[in-house]
Amino acid sequence: MTHDDLIAQLTSLCGAKYVLSDPSEMAPHLTDWRGHYSGQAIAVVKPGSTEEVAAIVKLANQERVAIVPQGGNTSLCGGATPDQSGNTLVLSMARMDRIRHFDRPSQSITVEAGCILESIQQAAEKEGLIFPLNFGSRGTCRIGGNLSTNAGGLNVLRYGNTRALCLGLEVVTATGEVMDLLSPLKKDNTGYDLKNLFIGAEGTLGVITAATMQLFPEPKAMATAWAGVRDINAAIDLLQRAQAISGGNVIAFELMPKSIIDNVRRHYPDVAEPLENVPPFSALIEIASTAEADAQPDEAGQMPLTLQMEELLASAFEDELINDATIAANAPVAVRQAKQAIRTGMDMGLAAGLAFEIEAYNRTVTTADRREGVLAFNEKRKAVFTGE
Ligand SMILES: Cc1cc2nc3c(=O)[nH]c(=O)nc-3n(C[C@H](O)[C@H](O)[C@H](O)COP(=O)(O)OP(=O)(O)OC[C@H]3O[C@@H](n4cnc5c(N)ncnc54)[C@H](O)[C@@H]3O)c2cc1C
Image (tube, rainbow, N blue to C red; front, top):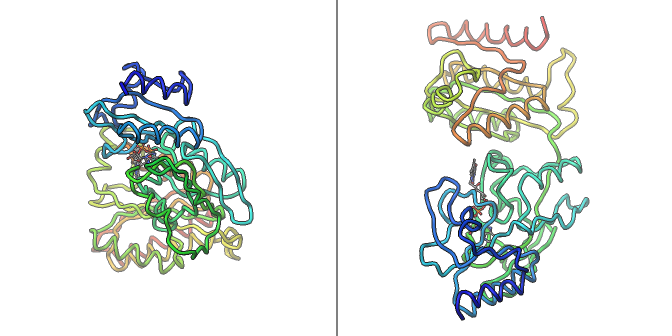
């Protein structure tokens, strides 16, 4: 079969509108996000259903034509870019972006593989839940791509990689058969766990067409801190302490070298610096609780998670793990918005520090006055949080 014949067959399967063979129309699909890789393709096909995916894969298998599945094309290792052979079909999942089903009892959602990550987050929020997978490309990347790269992101410490969030899959195998492995069941011990073969496989074993993903209760309280950390070993110690003090409630811990902050400052001189002097390493620490009780202040007006964060920072000061810190706490919505801005920027190597314009305070403690510094630190934070 010639390439023209193949395009004609694909057109009869999906409709002319969804088979792109014009070079200018194909171009965005033939180069990766950073412009590091580019390739050639016979066509870019955009199926609208699992049945269409199966028919395309069968046809390609029969004609010995390679397929490169593509979600949002935001991955950074070239896996979504065809090679230079010109004997490849790019299978764009962009049209398969529907939410199939929300299941309240299991707190899960079943979506098509082309569903944009941010759409799943928004659908979860409408139900008072969260989908915790999160990173800078969330408005463009698609769940099939997230699963195929087993993406990590910002909340991995608490919720795990995409694999850990997946309860079930629907897959079209390389021979065009549909495997229905969709299930909302968490405790599933029925034999082989085939779905895990396809997660992280970058499309080498089949095309993911739908997935059932686990949702979680929304955090009711949060405390976020930014600390100047002595070195990497100190950061590891700090993380362990944070886990212990918060009862395993650390949802984010991100370590950034000074070079990243300097880079941000170079491009965005107006961005507020979280700390007075940029330390060799900065850590963004976030703890969160889904318990309503943690969202209520105690008799002294202190929020439980703020106290935990203060306890963490005070002990870390004392043991010289950190030499500076600032807290943004008890403003979950504002913190979440600002944090999102930080993270989006940081992912792109651009921004830092925005969250700390909210209810923040700074205190630099030198080695010489450490003991006094800890005391002053405690006094100052008391003043900030009691409004004195
Ligand atoms: C600003 C930015 C921040 C990022 N931050 C992170 C981060 O924190 N953590 C992280 O892990 N990654 C991160 N990434 C990388 C990227 O966003 C993720 O890897 C994302 O999961 C890719 O999804 P995608 O839909 O764009 O996949 P694509 O790039 O389209 O595809 C990725 C791979 O999966 C395959 N594939 C896609 N869809 C399917 C499917 N339905 N079935 C089978 N195979 C398929 C492709 O062939 C390719 O091999 C970031 C990228 C950017 C641009």
